[in-house]
Length: 150
Length: 109
Length: 281
Image 1 (tube, rainbow over the protein chains, first blue to last red):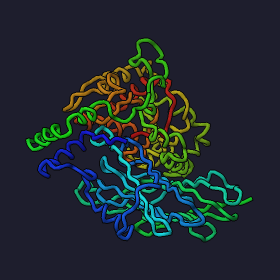
Image 2 (cartoon, chains in turn red, purple, cyan; image 1 turned 180 degrees about the horizontal axis):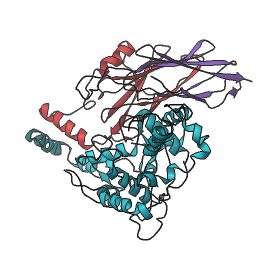
Image 3 (cartoon, each protein chain N blue to C red; image 1 turned 135 degrees about the vertical axis):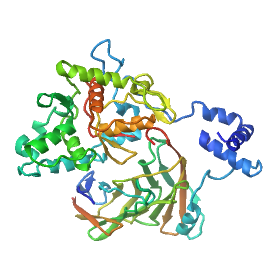
Image 4 (spheres, rainbow over the protein chains, first blue to last red; image 1 turned 30 degrees about the vertical axis):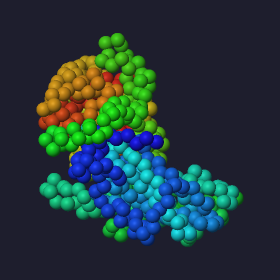
């Protein structure tokens, strides 16, 4: 999927490029918190492998205060390595951590909830399996701010 | 805090062994973030449900640790496979240690 | 725009060029198809060619929360209202149920026809006001404050008894001057942004006002569970918000001005099904 910039991000990216002496703007825009450290703490310093995690968010949140989120992991439940936990972080929120789901061999590695997002950003979910492996997914969501609903 | 009972819905209450049951829960709670200021400019202290747990016949099934980024009136949906008949016990715990509890029974046929 | 930001914007244009044109163009997420989901207006002079509930202007995710009563946190207010319905309060030792018995039968249709003329007061009253009239006169209890959880819950519970029924208010007889006043207020520009209700909700619904996708501003779902506030919001609080958003000075909740506007809003939504408690952004 081609990632398009919205106006705010375009400006932020432009500002970043300007500050870096016209270097390329890379990485998630506008991280305001310690989300990377929170992920590292969760994984014990291991880098999660991208994939196997399905993170669902609306493309556009009409209001950032109530955003439906679903996460699922393509992994066997019951026997073998099962999903133990999923951590959800929001890089542009005041606090990185959003929620940590805890599973068991009895449960299916799928969960849904409703969350608060302070701005347009890439939300990240990291899954921890019982064999010590980690998988992740990220998803961009646009959050409506500053209007009559904001 | 909670003036109303938590809402719980199972997609089925009678299942075959190992069949997946879909569980939805909704509980009334303000989930005050601790980041907001009142009209006088004072920070409103954080007051959230920080833990949710679901057990089946005393065995842990599903749970979560909530932060202030979970919306007010927390909603959860999860799935599990009961291997025997029994009771699902739900517990929500907030920052003041208040516990909200509920239970549902499931029959494995 | 500050000079620094302006410079950033220029730098950005140099870097990304064409990509920006795409981003500023029609790249937004797909908008709900609200057209064709409305009902026909009662006559040809009606201000709207089609009367469409705010439901159809919301994203599928927002609609999904309303579609299933279990998922809709607005039902906590319905449940709270149900509890209060049969709870005695005040010196007379009565509850709502003492006079009205089962709300499911006695309140059916009531909420769809408010505001309504009250001869004794020589003015119309809305649901909140009628609830407090019952409390003070029949129950000898304190009136509930506007915006209190109790008053909003009871309003929601009573209005919920009319869910699915068409909104239909009287605008003739003594109601006529109140209707005219409401119509006039609806078309009067207000605030520093100099916008009337009609500027957004009659002339520009189905379009974006900055980040907002404008609806017809229909009242059939109120009180509504707002995703923003994460609680039930009564109509007069929402109207306060609208006037505040155009940087005007809002009328007071339950004032004659808002009552007249409520009447006009109900009329311009004639025939829409009551959706209380609806879910909106």
